[in-house]
Image (tube, rainbow, N blue to C red; front, side, top):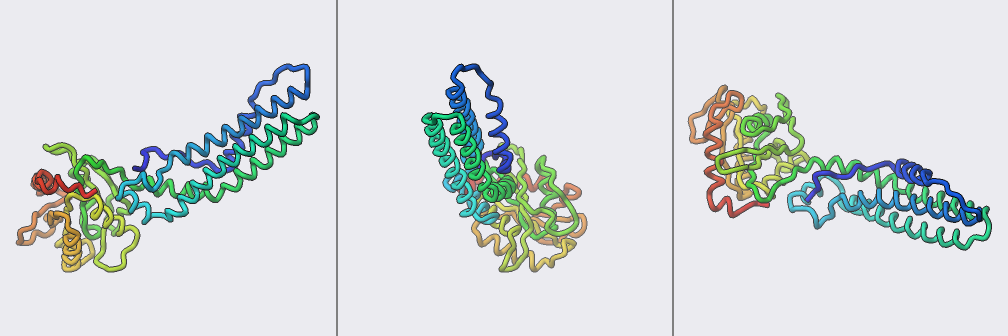
Length: 324
């Protein structure tokens, strides 16, 4: 799974500055033989620089998930959001650089130990500084990529595989975000224009049966070619949903005809997940059919919807199919 805290990604110059700053903190000491003193101090500086840089890069490499660490949902979301091969390549390059810096430090420490003149020691130390800096500077593009990917990874919500998952789906602007704000403590951005929700929002419904994870996903349009935002919603439905609340806006104030919403409903049902069909905005229009009528704005029908969700989740077939 994706760690809850992903390490920050410094710039290459920050790594260099941090390493040299630490090396400059080495305390001076007395030694009668100046050549031996210069050797010891130069070796200590190289060791500190290598250790600081290695620790920084290691924290990144170990702090970011590998392919096998991800759940099926997280993997599909990651593949959608960014070039995963490029991501893995960047992590490999950081690891390669870690090893190269260690080899470089070992090489120059060995040369310094065998040096017979102070000038030679100083030349070797400065040569190490230059080559070390070049290795780190070469990481800048890889660090830039990881910095962007970090933001995208943080968009992917953590799904507890031990808890059931309900996905609220439907066309844009039908009231999904307002509904999740009524049944959980989540307060997502709510606006009157389409595609306000661009990422998956996770809230927790505290019901009689315990906690239920509720996902407010971006709106989906009834079309064959869908954008990244819409595909996020479909991945959530396909990979983690135990139950789908599909919201229809019969008033069409969402900006989309009911018949288009009905076609999307048929597509979602074909995925094979259990679906609760809900008509929202009953404060504007209430049709005469068997669907549950609610108003996420006024709260009408919300308690009944929660009871229905809990009944469906309690069903053995649902509990036996985590969808994850």
